Amino acid sequence: MGQEMKSNIYTRPNRLLTFLNSKKVAPYVFIFPFIISFTLLTFYPTIQAFVMSFQRILPGQTEFVGLSNYRRILNPTFYQAFQNTTTYVILTCVILVTVPIFLAAMLNSKFAKFSTFYRASLFIPSLASIIVAGTVFRLLFGETGSSFANQVIGWFGVEPIQWQYTSWSAMFLMVILSSWRWMGVNVMYYLAALQNVPLELYESADIDGANVFQKFFYVTVPHLKPIITFVTTISIINGFRMFEESYVFWETNSPGNIGLSMIGYMYTQGVQRNDMGFGAALGVIIILIIFVISIIQLNLTGAFKRGDE
Amino acid sequence: MKDTKTMLIKVIINCFFCVISLVALFPILSLLISSFRPSSELMRNGISLTIDWSNLSLNNYLYIFREAGDYWQWYGNSLIITTVTIVLSLFFSSMVGYAMAVYNFKGRNFVFLLVLLILMIPFEILMLPLYQLFIDLNLINTYFGIMLPLIVAPIAVFFFRQYALGLPKELMDAARIDGSTEYGIFFKIMMPLMLPSFAAMAILQGLSSWNNFLWPLLVIRSNDMFTLPVGLASLLTPYGNNYDILISGSVITILPIIILFIFFQKYFVSGLTVGGVKG
Image 1: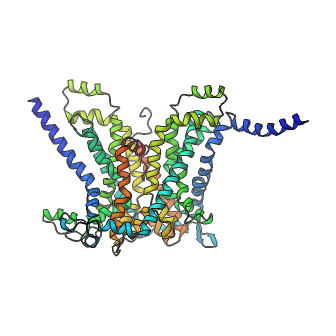
Image 2: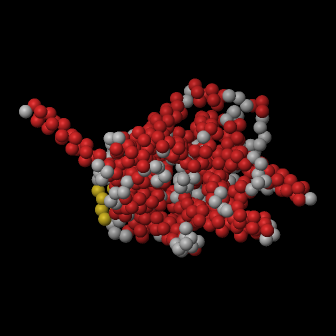
Image 3: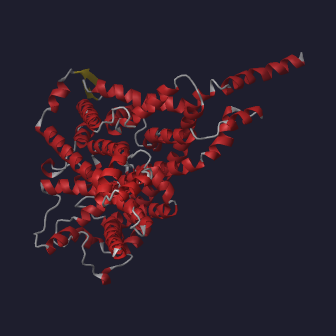
């Protein structure tokens, strides 16, 4: 009797433990946190983003308004935000995809003496938060004649510029801030990829009498193609996500909306004006734009073709 | 002839990189030097090349250490949030990544597809519905609300999975024969083997959390819950009279990170280049 009770007490938890410990069940226990977080933090908000975009959301009452939010999107402010963001994406892509290739190739050559120091210096800007970086850039590009930027252009006889108040210089500020922060990280991507270029190719190019530039364009660049595609993709996506680069200069009120990005527009409408339905509709449009452009870009670079990694 | 030419190229390239390094470090260095200048002058003139050396003082730092209780509250918030985010996100993400690498289970490929999918959806798009959800769940203005979106990071899951694919699976069978449970295998045998990947991910997650701005900006409602970026941003107005705290506070925010970077450069680079996530 005593024996039986004892085994009863011990078999029950044992069975549960054995169940949890079986090779079939354990992996599901391991991935459980992901399932929860995916459902709560990605799946639900994704569905909700679409639902909300058809609603007008007021505290305590929510009504379906059909396509009305989407119709309201086609307004001059949105065009301005779209234009700003697109310009920003193009400029940051051109700078952050091409310049690091040259820097990495030179750093990787036998000529660069203190390569470790150069790499570290290039990388350090990525450690700064956007707020710290933005604070410095605001002060460097101050509007008075004695700010650093105006002193430098003064050497060339250019009048002081009110950097934060004209359209082209506003774009310049955001692009240069972003380029400064992310240059080093992209150099690291290319440097890692350069390690995989077979050295024999350079040797045989030497035998054929190729010069430095021919070697760069005919040996190095083709081998970097997959990583170039990758860097372009993240630059496009990060460009369309732009918000903070504008926020540090003007918060959400840039003069004449010269610094307004699409995410910034979504933030002001959705959060500050509490027009969540309209904000959600903007989000849907932004994701569609990113999606379409990514597909076009990946098609152009041939990433979908077979045999291209 | 050939030697002089090589020499010349060497000199040119090294000079070029000295200039590039200077340009890259210049904003940080100028921030450091400016932190010793009177804040009123900074506010009026910005950072300028003409420095009045006799004017430099430790006043901004004395002020922040003695008077700026708010700033240290933000510092504490950021430290707590970053530490807890690192611990929780490494714990959960490594579990998930590990299981996806070493087990053959039904739905594994589907889960991996989901991880890649989340990597491609910009967080900002989900921001409004999440914000609404967090309001409904009463998570607004709480530490947990600030941290939650970073806790199971798809990028970390992806990284741990790649790393765990290279683990020796024979060890698992040996441990099973010795009577170890599946969880014992992970915590006692495999986790120690995954340590290098933990270092890189701790840095990535730590930096993302320390520098995170947009989500905390949405969720935080009161000054005493501010994290460093949100707090510093609140001082960043043209009409502000807190430039002393803004400048010395920015230095104190970034200096520990740079010191850590100097010692753990390798892990910083592998952490930050894992998928090009923006901090």
